[in-house]
Length: 110
Picture 1 (cartoon, one colour):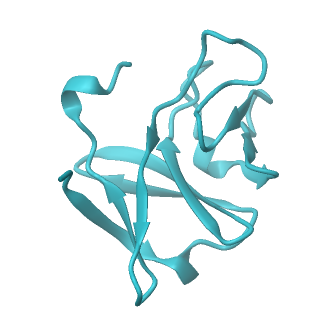
Picture 2 (cartoon, rainbow, N blue to C red; picture 1 turned 45 degrees about the vertical axis):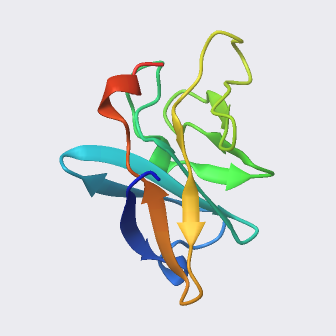
């Protein structure tokens, strides 16, 4: 079973807003879209800007810097089939603590 990392409580992630969390020096973007929490790599593949600063709607985040759009469940970019961001599994316990699956450092560049 993969290691889980506590990233906050569900209430820490307001709807339609992104939030950046940092774990061991690596930043991740966390989103709450209609009560469903998603975690992706924070860096936009276009210019490395923060996706966590973006707004989410209908399961997609728009990079606030250059407008690239990503599905937060699949990581797929709407504009380029070959471009994706890494998506991490999320777990919420009965106390509404939010955990993300620990990244596998050997697979970060998939």
